[in-house]
Length: 135
Length: 135
DNA sequence: GATATGGCTGACGTTAACGTAAGCGTCAAG
DNA sequence: CTTGACGCTTACGTTAACGTCAGCCATATC
Image 1: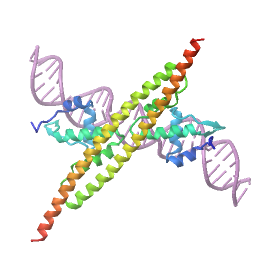
Image 2 (image 1 turned 120 degrees about the vertical axis):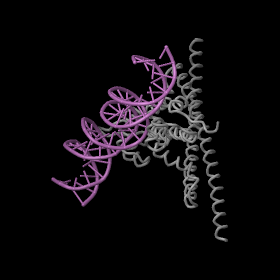
Image 3 (image 1 turned 180 degrees about the vertical axis):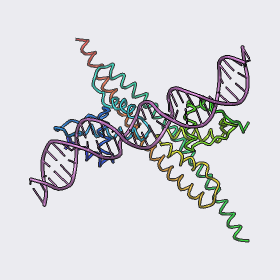
Image 4 (image 1 turned 30 degrees about the horizontal axis):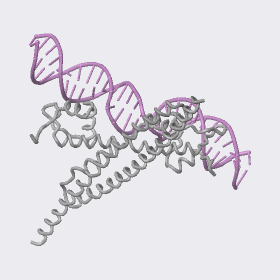
């Protein structure tokens, strides 16, 4: 079933978000589910966009920034200049992500070193306690 | 000069933040500069903490979360149980950072693929235009 | 001694990203 | 047929993270 659709409740359960959040994303034009009367029907494409939205949020992007990024993910139609611009924007965002990864790596190394040092301090403390107990 | 200090203005200029932000961080106990009368004097330690704060922000952590992390970076005193707890918390945060890196890698691959596909589409468009012009 | 520079303390304003509550429709189950 | 479960809209409330403004030192400079 390649054309499965989702109710708002299904998506909420799957990704642990509230209906309010999804409606909010729609209002901000990050999602555009079709309608069955009043009810929202989310397609596969909507689901994919939601995944990107949540991923973006986890990396500290604002919804406005994410909106721009989303356009970058579906603007494969349009003319040559349009596509070229999309590719350029894609490269810029890619650079940003790579820079973020570099900084993340640095943060991880930092923390590892700090833990290692705390470990050493801990061991010397334990040794001191043992010596004291041996008196 | 290992004991250089900084005025609020200096730190603001260096890290492109406003005085208001630094005072806000102090109020939330993320920074604790000493005083010269009314004026704040930031030490090297404060500067280091600020770097961690800004780094945390770039990765989408809230100031409250960052506050906990900061404690993790200076709690090398205290008793054995205290240090052990700090090390545990450090490992938990480390896991979190590593998971974030994995997701970031995935996001980068995703985007690379998308750009590559857009590139292919672009080339086929260009080929089509060339064929049209050759009629 | 006026003024410019840099910093200070309240205190109210603002923006983003939802939360929450009120009131209503609808369809299936009891 | 009414009672849930699910969804809808409208609209006001809330929290985080500052922005902005008013009014007030202190010091250095003209």
